[in-house]
Image: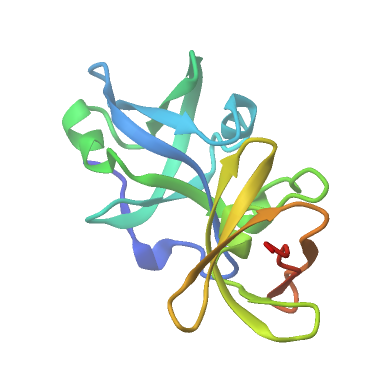
Length: 180
């Protein structure tokens, strides 16, 4: 029987950070493919620890018992899971850990889960909207801000536009580029 605990067993304080996406089962011993977001070394550091899994249908905790690299992905196993049928329910799910378990991101970087959803203000204090997404575009990320009227504002996140990310205060200050 699979050791999948209900969501109430999950850590409840602070944001959760996705460390990878689970793919399809691998082999006949209950292993599954993991597409890590931060590399193999980080995943290996969570062996023996309880992690949170979110799929479209279920969420709860599992204990990571092994991880081995396989090209750009990892083959992982969870405690109490011994067949491909048992592990298949995790396919497509996100493997998450509490933010405090993660190393600090390199200077000037933030974890997606820490900033998406924060309100964005201009330097004078006027609300621009809420950061809803960001994506890589060439040499800079593009941040997507949704205004209160539903308009999407896309702006490069570069030193000239990003004034401040205040995680403690729960806000971002950005100076939009003059497009005239």
